[in-house]
Length: 317
Image (cartoon, rainbow, N blue to C red):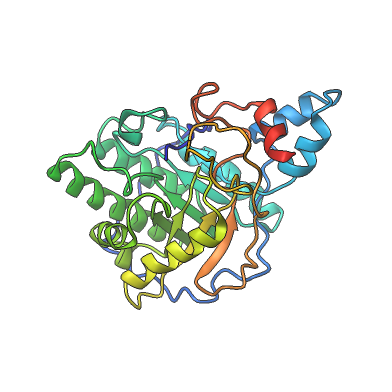
């Protein structure tokens, strides 16, 4: 799996001390089943919808994708604006009585140099960026998807680099909780056809998910069917023991399941999955979310993170 490069700018520096390991609050019931998630009028798909009223593809894209709540990615390293950019999202969500889903995607050596390469120049810079990101969250509820691929994709890191990354993820989560006590921070669990549940749980434990996180996420930017991801996420949670952690699943593009050859990069024939909802019927699964933004490319049919109306229309068909 590789992740999309989102074209959301980042961050005004506001200093917050990173706390020592955050002990998660009781998580059961913290995300009510009727939770309404944030729909961003400034997303690429909604900007395209507004700019193309006469396009024959516009009605389907608007109704099937643009109308749905989706995550907002913070993936361009611009430390002078990230606090302001995060605050735009959280303030807009608060005005609608909605819960925003924000993706922090700035870890150094991101994607191990793949299609979504980038991130902060080093971990010290990342720590500052994470504190500034946290400073924009405010006092309302939010969901933070912390660094997709950062735990599942580590083949390019030395043992020392990996240990330092794990520690930095824990510091980032602690900074978020210190700045915004109602924020829920979810750590990277990969997906059901990648690492085993036991391997992923071991890595999550090393990244201090038990003391710094509220849960895990799976299937970001991938296509595995929801039932498979639920089973996998629950297996990871079981491996982590009776921690009280929960999970969220990315269902944005898994309506047809994975491509026959398990292609991950802009494969054809995929469809939208379950609409975002906190009504999962499973106490271990907080929500189905659209973390990957349908119509934004993985990096094979165009630049990673760029919006393709053709691909959006195909997914929405």
